[in-house]
Length: 334
Image (cartoon, rainbow, N blue to C red; front, top):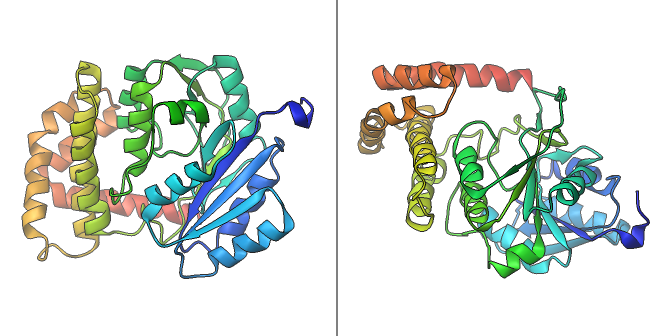
């Protein structure tokens, strides 16, 4: 590696809320990176537990850690605070219950250097139920259309994390998270960022670990208002603010919209609130059938097309079957 003074500064931003059981592992993984020229911006987003206190202890021991405390603004608002406080040449976002392999930053910087892209990502990540590394580590360069479509399809785990962004690119294009969004703020951000990027560098290597076994995580615990309705509101926001001129993007968007109606119905069923949200459940089933043909013809695997057919014929039963499979997968990752 180059001498420390020659390395560009990388800002690592994590917004945290009620992660006292996970934040130490996350911070340890960041501070033990092989790439050492870092600043770590920890945003305590009004967390009611000891998360902020734990982060402050790290800041006392390592000058690279800066803790910002604020009233709860949600994940998007917390990440915006991170961007505002970042002084690095590049910035990456880490979910505060996840963790990094020791070469994550070094790998992301290598992608930037090899592609000279506006931002870079890896198509793959470890999960708590899959710690197998990929066999190949090829590098690709995507244009905006390709990237946006891939983000809508189920081939890449969604989020602003597992990516590295040029700070001058974000600031030049005034790119921020939308704090009003209840969920899916990462999808809105990365599709917006991709829409104005000239090129996106894409790797294959796994260096980020995505936690599946946090029972309080928004992606694990069912929540109709935040997750279900929030996902549909985010898709509506994206449709109103993102150019849909490309047939490739339109096709991918329709797949994700169908999937969001499925996801919303899942929140209702798993919360056992069918009677409270009967009208919303009917809307979800109606639109799942409405967009089923477009979803079936999307650029997805045969298994995903079979899921579309199953949920078109028997949406409630299909949701329960898929949920049972998901619980078994989560249990295997404990």
